[in-house]
Length: 159
Image (cartoon, rainbow, N blue to C red; front, side, top):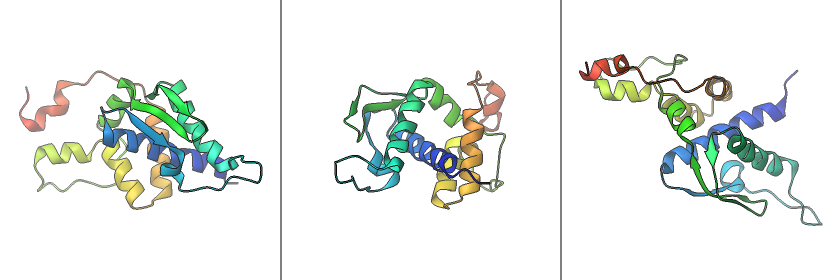
């Protein structure tokens, strides 16, 4: 049995983190509508369950230490949101989970960038690959930041 709310959650997390990553280190507004698209309010002005679930994902990411923010913007999103150090390190780390091999003809710096969690999430979102997006989010959320080993940069000539 599929748990659609968990699928929605993982896709929201991917988009929230990627939107924050693309503007990092500049804090900015994160709107639910930018993550899931426009939603309607009901006759009494209440947002949909889907809208509130996305806002809940934003707040959960902040509570778990992946985002920082200054305030909520009513029920529309977060003000002055920025990735935490933890999220930045996890997103820019080389991923042990790889779905595609990088082209060996590419420069070493590009190969390293394509092996990061962030780049793989970007590609999964662009391809609208639900299974890959979910796997990458679960992989990211299950990890703790580790010190960067200098051997990670060996292809660039670091010793």
